[in-house]
Image 1 (cartoon, helix red, strand yellow):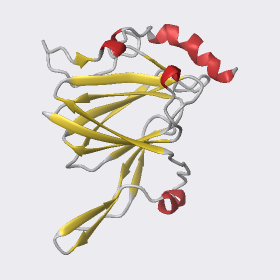
Image 2 (cartoon, one colour):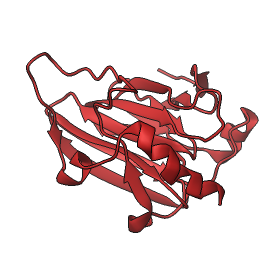
Image 3 (cartoon, rainbow, N blue to C red):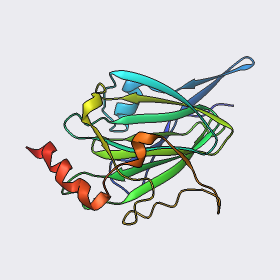
Amino acid sequence: MSRHLSIEETIIEGLYIINPTIYRHDEDLVFETYNKQEWMKDGLDMTFVQENQSMSGKGVLRGLHVQKKFPQGKLVRVVRGVIYDVAVDTRIGSPTYGEWYGVELSSDNKKQFYIPEGFAHGFYVISDIAVVCFKVSDYWHPNDEIGIPWNDTELKINWPIKENEMPIIADKDLHYDSFSLLKEKLHQREE
C-alpha cells in the first residue's frame, strides 16, 4: 500500500482535510504526518511550534476553544480511536463567520484536519478511548483562551450524539458565553 499526500478543501476557506503520504516498508506502514516542503507545494505554508496530545474516554466533548490575542493554527490527528472534530469560523470580517465544519478523524482513516488561526475548535469522542495529537502554530497562553458552548443555539452544530445521551463536558467548558456575545471579545484581536 502506498498513497501520496492529498489535500482536500472544505466549504470554509482555510480549512483543509489532509490525507498523509503512506509508505510500505516490508511489513510496516509509515505515515508521513507532516512535511513542510511537500505541503508548501500545495500552498500550505505554516510553522508549528508545539505539539500536544490528549486522551479522552467515550462521550467526552472538548471545546469549543478559541484564543483572543494569540490565535493558534492547529493540525489535528487521531492516533487511537475515533473523534468528530469541529472548527467554527470566528474570523471577524470573514464571509463564513459563524459557520462550522466537522469531520470524523480516526486511527483507521489517518485523516488530519488543518484549522488555521481564528477558528474555535472542539471534538467529541466516539470510540471507547481516543488519543488525539495536535500541532499548534503558537504557544499556549492559558489566560488567552475563551470558548463557545458546544450546544450553542445559533451555531446548531450537528454533533454525532445519540438521542437521550449527554456528552461529558469539563467544568470550564460549561460556562462560556453564547456565540452572539463572543464577537465583542474577539474584536480585541483587532485592537
